[in-house]
Image (cartoon, rainbow, N blue to C red):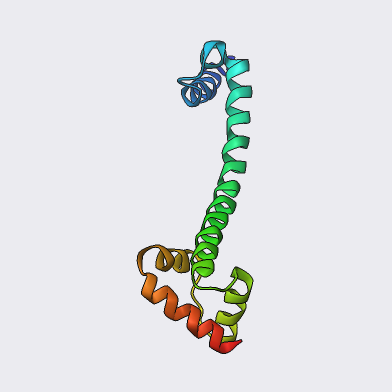
Length: 117
């Protein structure tokens, strides 16, 4: 029976990693061992980045809503509490869009929140 070496599978595995490392600087794009480490680390950064992206957008939305609230004489926490009591179920993304693009609509929401307090 013929002896089977893993040449094809090994080459495919290595080429897969080197393809992911394409564009990296220096040996990270050429050498398998360093490319593997770089790809693994970049995967970790990407995973962490996906979580941070959600945090950053939420912070941005809250900042925008807070700025709109201050212009209408109420603070952010009182505004959100008032909306909750009034039964308004808009998420922060939509509230921030309203605060930016529709000032009259946001003022109406603030008045609704103030009335519910």
